[in-house]
Amino acid sequence: MISKAATVAEYLSELPEDRRKAIEAVRKVIRKNLGKGYEEGMQYGAIGYYVPHKLYPPGYHCDPKQPLAFAGLASQKNYMSVGLMSCVYDHPESEALLRSEWAATGKKLDMGKVCIRFKKLDDVPLEVIGRAVARVPVAQFIEFYEAAIQKNRRQPAAKVSAGAKSAPAKNKAAVRKKVRAAGKK
Image (cartoon, rainbow, N blue to C red; front, side, top):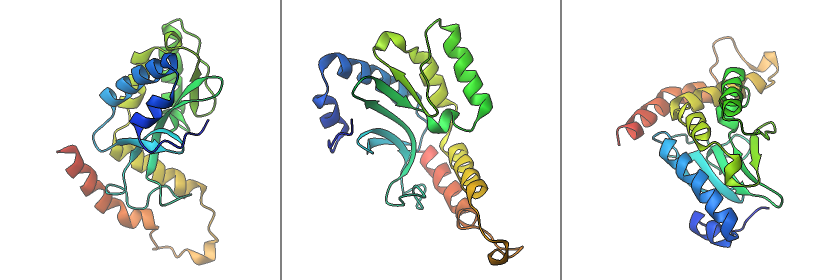
């Protein structure tokens, strides 16, 4: 369910008590393990963790007004979910590590392509979520994101000269400088 809440506090206040407690527990772990530079706020009708425009001005390529999404936390109609797209999607090693760490806890993993679904807090090994989030610093996420964008872009060869740089490549030095500065704060 997509919430119309403007703030995380408002979003949490809309939830039934049992879901609010579960979401708050997972949120606490994510925030504790979130690398410097990421921010928390409402994004796509749920709690989002993202790279703000001050660090990555281009934003999300499909909607540049949105900051670059990193992870999400939501209460859906029939389950709650943790979206860890950047931590595991298209990262076979990271996904395998998450799956093996989860299996070692003895808990059942209900994972789609980019989100982990759970019905109650006891279903979630919080330490595994924390490690998955902590493994991806902002600079690494931006590099992965830009590489994925370039890989998936289909540009006619005639329009791209041999020495031409993409917009993300031109911004890479500026982005790295901003990320380093954010990490020092």
